Image 1 (cartoon, rainbow over the protein chains, first blue to last red):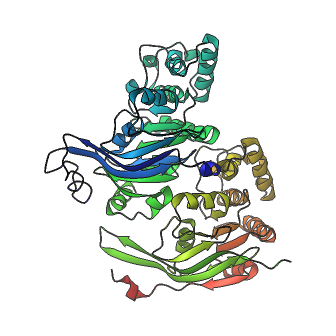
Image 2: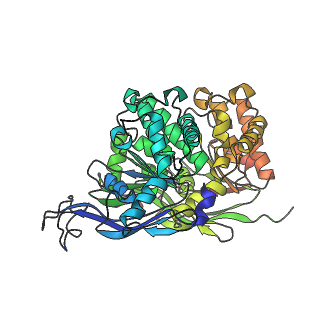
Image 3: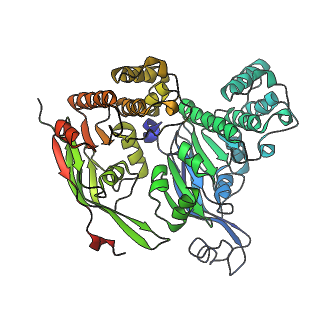
Length: 283
Length: 236
């Protein structure tokens, strides 16, 4: 929802850097797209991402594109507080105005944010769903985290979320292992949406699915954006996905942002040699 | 009639494409300068390759220009050549409609929702947005039986009318048209022309490219001639 832009960004990342390994003063300088590597030649540390800055506004979908190893999933892990940056700040602003620096937040507050303010959908449903409990149970877990204790309220909310994500109500007591791949992804989305989050992170959610199943999930994501206005980060290596979903796109390579802009500009007038190559090879 | 004020002022706009892999630089538009006024239609004319479509895409920020300014007047005025991405998105959502001869829309979406999309994007509730969309579709005489169908199977004329209905539904201040009547039959073209006239009457500033000189003569209040960029500019 463009009108909510005045409210200020939901996420404001500044100089986000994550180095795996002991690190040295030259790690950032000696890696990145210019050098064509993300392993520091001086100390052998892996610079997963470095100096990534962006803003995400309420209701906006930001595409994060790049090949495997480019650092796109690292960005998502940092946003979801599954990992902490080596340097840089990430400001997260809740809708009622309270702001946090995700880089320095304590573990209890991190858990609260993950449980109640963020939603995450993984490429691999085994990471996003609990296969030991029913579809309804998967949603209930999230609602319980938000403090809901009334059985009927939870069941009603779960049914509503299944409707919302086009999972048949009759499947509420079935375990995710009995679902098709597309339905598992839709259940992951239902589970992610349960606490009514302010930030939804989607990591390669349509990768490996049949085209018709992909289409249905992409449509679902767009209708969620239209109806709920939740801000989303969509990580993908698929140009078609950003074309369809994202208003703006950031292109990563060797852990650096090589280009960012309006998605149609990235696709029709790419500036960076790598983006040009990426766009040309897709046509 | 009130004095017509400029909605858009383009000055010294130049755009060239650099293709890194081939080490080439291809100039496309050079030093375009003109203004578009409320309630008037400015036609961009010139030979093929003069950069007419490029100028529209620079204004829409699909292309990034190398030089020049693109001022969308308002309070405050906005330079679309240099403003930040959110300001550009906001201008797109509220002020600028861009209609090409192709219908870019989400597949699988019913026509009425395709047309309503610019309204829902600025927060208008879906039922009201759909009502406004139906009014536009009726004006453009698109048969009602098609409203709930996705436009993928429509004829060129029908698609073009959907496209224009969507461009006008949120009452933009600036409407950009790139060959809106190309390959349309006579009746569809007449309906599109009537809609353009109505938009002009309603005070919309229109910037258009027509393939047909008769349309320029019939609709344009101002004509801007672009020429092909000089070959000298080709040196990388």
